[in-house]
Image 1 (spheres, rainbow, N blue to C red):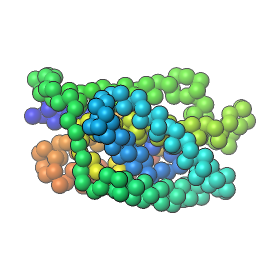
Image 2 (cartoon, helix red, strand yellow):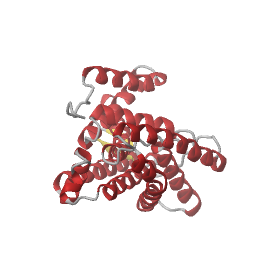
Image 3 (cartoon, rainbow, N blue to C red):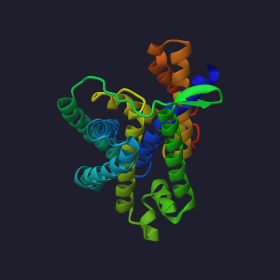
Length: 290
C-alpha cells in the first residue's frame, strides 16, 4: 500500500512538475505571470481526447503535435497581447500586475470557449490500462509512461538550460534583463521564446495527464494554482526546485487522499504551501534575492 501510493504520487507529481516548469519559464524569464496556463493544459488534454476517440491517434503521437501548437499559440499571444504590456511597463512590478490582469481575462475567454465546445462534464478515455508490475505494485502502463516522459522532458530541459550556451542566455535574462543587452542578448526575443516554451510544456503536461485523469473545461484553474504553488515552493525561476516541489506535492496529495480523506487533498496542498512560505519565503531552492 505504501509503495503503491508512493508510485501513484510520483506519477501525479511528475505531471504537476512538468506543467509548473512551463509556468516557471514564463514567470522566471519572461516576467509574465500567466493565470491562463492551466487552460492551455486542459485544451491539450481535449486535443488528445478528440484525436484518440475520433481519429484513433495515440496520445503518444499527440505528444508531438500538441506542444508544437502550444508553442505557436503562446508565441502569438506574447506577440499580440503581452509584448505591448512589456513595452509600456515602467517596472517589473507594473508588468506583473498588468500581465496578471490580462491573463486573468484570457483565462475566462479560453475557459468559456471550451465550455461551449465541450460542455462542463468530466471527460476521460481509456489508453494503455495494461497492468505493469513494479516492485510488486500493479500500476497501469499509461501512468508509468506518463511518469517516464514527464521526468525525461523536465530533466532534458533542465540539462539544456544549465549546460548549454542557449540555456546560459535564458539564465542571463532571468537574472538581469537590464544587463543582458550589454552582451548582445536580445531580451525580447529570449522572453518571447521562453513564454512559448512554457506553453509547449503546458500542452505536454495536458496530453500526459489526459491519459490517466478525468478532466473538464473548467478544471484549468486548479492546475494553474497548483503550478503557481509549485513554482513558489521550489523557488521562482528555479527549474530543479519546480521538479522536486512538483513530485513532493503529488506524493503528499496521494497520501492524504489514501490515508486521510480525498476531500482534504487540496487543503493539504495549500497547508504545505503556507508552511513553506512561512519557513522559506524564497522557496526551497530559491535564493534570498528571488
